[in-house]
Structure formats: structure tokens, C-alpha cells
Image (cartoon, rainbow, N blue to C red):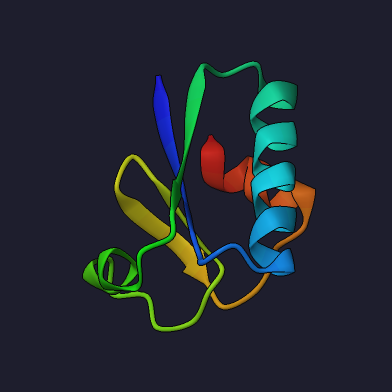
Length: 77
């Protein structure tokens, strides 16, 4: 099971990223758990200075923007 961590404090972009990440995981047919990391100190532990961000199994894949659905699918494979 993949651990998908949404790094952000709940802004509209963070919510959009969460929705797109869930869609991408479902389309790929992978087992996943979405975890929302909203505490600023916890986000900074990932080395992320701009939100939203996405970490897959603890590894940051990007931060500072909302990627497309296709871009997220590539990151999850």
C-alpha cells in the first residue's frame, strides 16, 4: 500500500491536489492511503517551503504547485 502524503495547511490548492491524487491512484488501481500533513513544522521536516506538496512513501515528489492528473499518475508509478 502506498502512503500518499498531501503537504499543506488546507488551502484550496491543497484540497485540489488531494482530489487529483486520489483520482490518479484510483485510475492506476493501486492500494493507497492519503494522509494530510497540515502542521507547518511537520511539512518543513520534509524540506518543503512552498505548499502544496506531495510525498509518496515519505519521498517528496514536488512542491509549490498543483500538477496535472497525468503528472501525478507518473509520480505514483
